[in-house]
Length: 142
Image 1 (cartoon, rainbow, N blue to C red):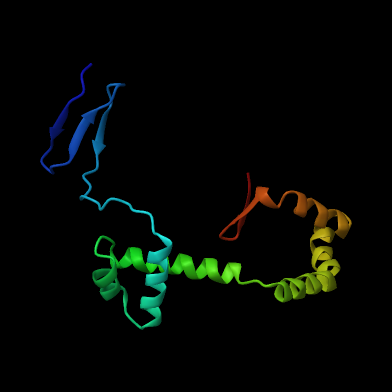
Image 2: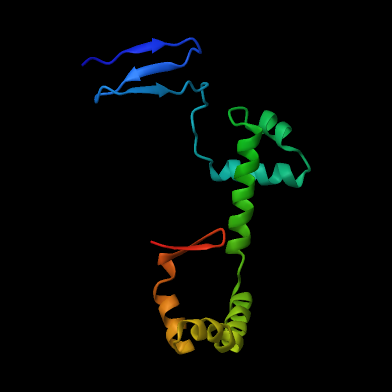
């Protein structure tokens, strides 16, 4: 069976798939080519925000091939990464100390629900932390 495209009254396109099933294709407006951000562009973007420029002027002045929304989203990712990476030795040590002070209390609540010792629960979570994802209020294990 050959593939065909026809137009309906609503101008949506119908195409016959290799299995002979009609499927509607989605017309998409032309999109800009995706270009990777360079370190220089990241620095320029951060500096423009420090200077108080809003997204549209930043896009127009410094990044004519990128939308204002692309600039905003890139800036958000950069700021998230920066706050994530800004943990110095002192802060990490404070975190470790706080964890050690409250780990028994923290894991005991879960251990009680599971009918296990708190050290066992702590160890199991540590071993499987990459397998547990949180989706809203639901825990998904994959």
